[in-house]
Image (cartoon, rainbow, N blue to C red; front, side, top):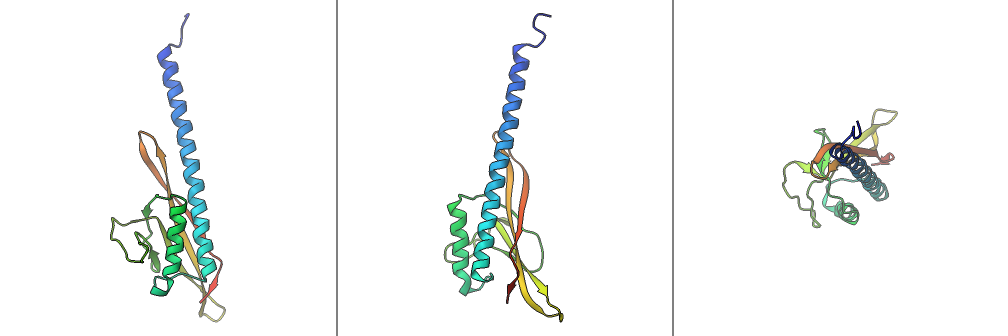
Length: 155
């Protein structure tokens, strides 16, 4: 009973604790980065007074792409299949769309707000940003979403 726990068992416990700590740190970093990007996209949409995919709105797309590149944001996920969904997947600086495998860095859903008389007077935008639990060796395990909304914007 001199050595009830051997060196191998202690080594396995230490390695497991290091992997758990690394997973928690990776999740925390990805989580905070995704929420920072989401907040930046929401503020860009609010400051521009709305968002659509028209040719006049190319500056908004460029601001969003710049915000993604400034944060080195590379997470992707699948946008929900909803009417009014604006999937800004793979847009280049000139606004041309690159066809991919259906994954996007973020999604913007334009949601109408019904006024008192039943007419749509304003819209708000729901921004969905993706992040994942990425553990070294195991790679990507789980995908999560960070969802945020703008204040109501008049059309």
